[in-house]
Amino acid sequence: MEGKLYGVGVGPGDPGLVTLKAAQLIASCDRLAYPASKHQRDQVAFSIACAAVPQAAEKAVLELDLPMTRDPQVLDRHRQQAANQLADCLKRGEQVVFLTIGDVSIYSTYTYLQALVQQMGYATEMVPGVPSFCAVAARLGTPLVEGGEPLHLLPASYAGTAEALTWPGTKVLMKSGRSLEQVAALLRERGLAPHTQLVEQCGLPGERIYPTLDQLEGTAHYLTTLVVKE
Image 1: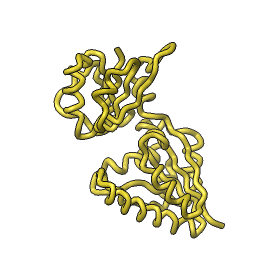
Image 2: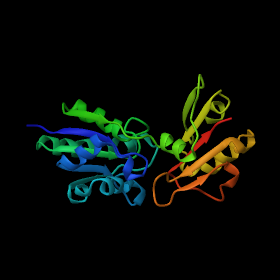
Image 3: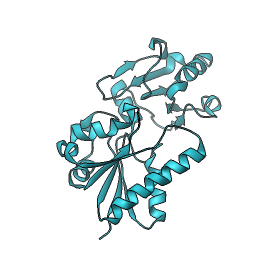
């Protein structure tokens, strides 16, 4: 019998936010897969899984080389290699859980691998997790939207952010990474600093909350979510 690949979101950091379904799959699967490189940040999802499900630490693992780059040729090559490795496990009948921080459908590497694995003829399933911006809003104690307000989810380090900041409603800025300083400068330029709240490493040991952008000193962790609410 061929195996199945599950893309499982483990939430933003607090192991208590791992869903029951995610925990059940992590406990029962044959193998856990996740991105791994020289950066410890790539193992955050695995750490969350281990904290939520003790059995996770004893599972067979598959560390996939998925570099943080925007070079399309490099990305395509590494994604195909990772998909081939996953397919080898599925061919042996293994049930494989690919761990991803936050929710599996939001800016997740898993979605690219799922498409490739599906093309090879294997079964897949996406298991949602608590999105980081929902956990951030809860930590800030503020609603993201009310009434007829729109909500905009923005990949902050990509083109189009400046224009998107003019849209009505609440803006959530994710994926700022090393561009956070430029994003912060843009928000200050637009007069949005007093209306911007941040949570760094939400639910993780290094969590820090900034009620306004002006309270941010220096650089922040790559796992930082900004909420712009005028």
